[in-house]
Length: 258
Image: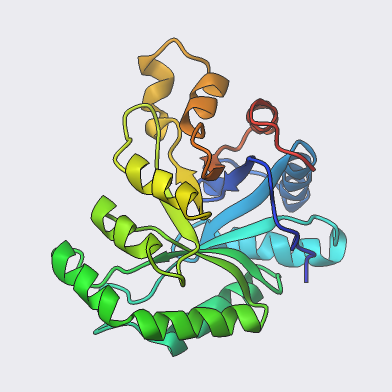
């Protein structure tokens, strides 16, 4: 397996989102060089989802890196739903199976952060929160077991609504949030502030508002990024880019460290 970082992170850092890997063509050697270059420039983590079309490519590259470049050393943030859309409720067994599948696919002994989602019943957020509250004991046991086995480090909630975010972070099983945040989207700021007060963390997605902020303001990408992560609880920004130079500039802007 490719090596992974297990030490706690204490400074803000940049995470490479892998969803758009297929937008460019590279040979395997070029992709491995890209991953090495990004890591060397200060990108600390990879964000992935088995739902992304790019996931098989990432899986293949990390499997190859385990042999060719065993010191690649990324942290892993993996996106998973439990329960998913068609499930009747939460299952600790399914959660464990999904975590184990990610560890195998990503050639890592541990998922450093799980971006967890309660997707069942998205059309009724009040009922969804009730179902979540009713499942808290099961969630807590499953998360504790995964941590005890060394399979996950933290369990973070992508809430789909600020109300669900507030409900989630109040409970011990939830170590923090994953949320959208940029110059326009600030709906989760109260929940992010609450994370900080509770000693929990937040990872942010879409710091450039899906690219809209890059054309609607005269601020530089570095300025936009620093603004997006300016709350104390925010640990990392997840950025999708296939440019080595762009990633290096953004990593430097927030002081990512090797």
